[in-house]
Length: 181
Image 1 (cartoon, rainbow, N blue to C red):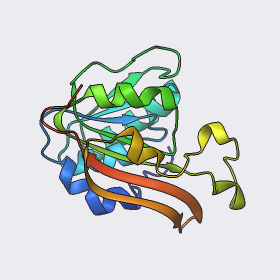
Image 2 (cartoon, rainbow, N blue to C red):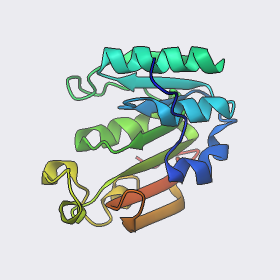
Image 3 (cartoon, one colour):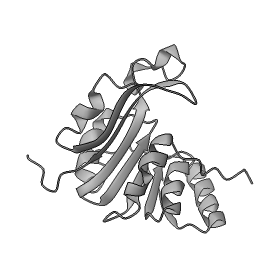
């Protein structure tokens, strides 16, 4: 069995405590190894790991069991289904190193009023540092802020991050209790 990795993204080390007592589960979208969701589960959050890779979800489930954590998993290809997320179902959503722009409206709808979003992914400056280089997977300036306009911004950053060096945008924001149409 591989080593258990609970080292979360730095953004979650800073803001993860906000996710520990939300009204509803936290969805870790395109979770990969699940280390970010497992970290939130270790803080007491109810976590649903979501990915298209069944083997990655099985490994994450084993890690959770080994650590005495309870998580739920959901195998789905988020890009193969229109509006894959149920409306107002999640107290929080986290997304790291994943971008599929058509999901932005679904993410907005899927958060319960007052729900929390943490999103970090690469920007158009990333090719200077390595992959990804395809602009379809790279955020434009202010794109996250615009996609979640109307949400209360708790933290926003665009620039260069270290360990590893990468060009990224981050946002931690809260869905308003009532959203204008």
